[in-house]
Image (cartoon, rainbow, N blue to C red):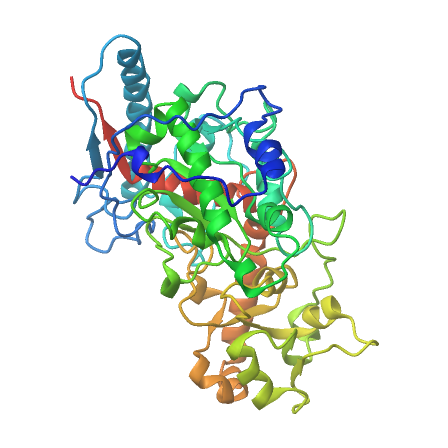
Length: 485
């Protein structure tokens, strides 16, 4: 089994401005602790994670599996822990309770898949149905179990504004909204009262805030180096791993961060061994740049207007959508340049703008369109997918290597169109080739999937925050930390 010591990752902070180091790292308004970097050597226990966290498909032969998609045909991954005494024996006891709780959840999901029915201690106000779900029985029961059991400990270490808060408006808004939801004691029912109760552990850092405060001003190309970001995150991990036993007992496999900033994937690049089990919840879910669908989570990018939780609902009925396809946005990245080369202001039915005319309303045009183009920009993710869903417009995903949000449970092929970059010149022919009947079915499914992309504060069952949590929950179900007896 591969192992590493924290001492091998200790990194000096001399490159960070001293004042910022004192303000953002050493001071913690939550508990008044000062972070220490006198780290002792600790062993990582690295679970071999399952390669796929997709929920089970509807079984055709009566068999069921679990990874969560391979339940009975294979055992979930497990990691054995050393025998401990005294104080640590108590920690083992709490871990045993946690793993027993997860085992009960797995069994309940398996039963729901086999029986094609759910069991719940309370009345269910929403029951997932239809082909937009990979397996509606597994998803429903898994969500029930998550609401019933899942507890998350948010580490208290670190000071604002780069820890414990994030942007709550504009394109990085989902990052700050999630941190805010999970970082106020007693606010979320998913918050553990004590870390020994937690199934997972949240690092409440904001990459967007780190870039804003630590990297400004940028005066040269060298200022774009990810070194400072990587050192800061690594040092934070070292601190919580030194202070508590939780990181070391799982090798970080039950720890996660949430970020929508383009730079977020790079937090792990400098120390891949340290972060190899760590769950990164990322908008920039590019599989060609190290995003791991079985371990990481694809985060929907949501562009929130100031003071609002979503765009105005201006979507029209299917028979009142005269525009075949619509896109407006900057020429960011090669995919959009190809799109503009072939379609920019060249067709009356495929409306493509780099700059929207002043007399046009972006949200209104989405609501009048049958299909909304969602080409990748500089990075694979775009807020247009969520905007299209809110507008009742069928998303047309034009990207390479993009792992779609909530793909564990949602079957995007049922409510979106995937067009390879190489077929951008054929967009109109492809969309016109979709029959009226098929379009109406897809559009109706877009309306049904909307609830999973709605932001509520506080969060509500099956909304976007619950879906993010469910993605993390699935990954925690996929391995077991075994305590020897």
